[in-house]
Length: 390
Image (cartoon, one colour):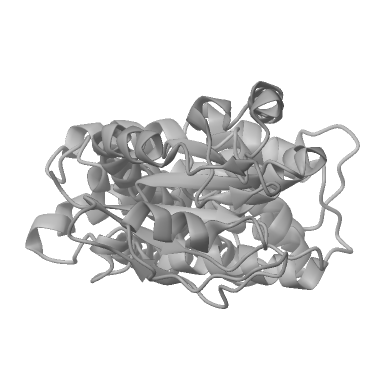
């Protein structure tokens, strides 16, 4: 089985380092004796005896700024794991370490830990209740953890196990001791979850990369939309869209590059098919009529041209994102020209006129190009991506 990674995360003083040493059977992680955390940076610990690595994180401090520093460190590690060469850094299982003697902090601690690990949306989580010395309190602590996760509906399914642990012998008094407990159960549970965690990490990384591409692509469309508005805001007839062609070509090439679709003979027909949809001569005339037909709208020629040009560029961009994403995901082939043509014709059919009317109702002659472009990009984006918040 592939050697996986376990992210060990918790508040300062929860006993993460002691736990790691107990699992590994050797003192690799530096431990402290109080509530102050001893781990100052993320570090990897492993042993030939254990089939997974342990990634120790900076402890979460009460201070807001130190807490943010800890969250950001985990997020940075997570993002670096998706880069080339970071394949061995994917997180496959997460241990949330909560201190059994601080049960009142469970809900806030778990919420903070979920924020830090938000990239790993489907990776299984084991909550380790450290310093679980009082046996009568264990079930109550387990219930508190389950309730805290139940309130986080988005991540409640991630919780797989809650394990009370005593990592090293604790002296209660001269006659009473709390012996080590729960370590082998934790190792077994982690090992059993590892195959699922490896698959989940791959899915989370793929999702992260796709979301980054989407964000970059939508930002790119916004930039080109602004250029379209500037170019369009000239007192000329929009009988055709030839004036936008160089801009549209550049937009398609930029978006294709984001999705890793190289410009070559094979992709040329794909790009041309997309571009042709944005250069339909009847669009300009129909859109002008649509804008002028809106009751109470009295826009000048410059504003009308700016709206039409910007909307055409934005629509072409959103349509290209849809096509390129399907190709990137392997759901469609770069050779499926008929499908591309149908998709782009749909984008520039009656829906285009609906979008134009919606935009026209929100724009006035007094608005600058940047404001007009933002309104256009937001409305077009909402039409094509109704679940994306702007």
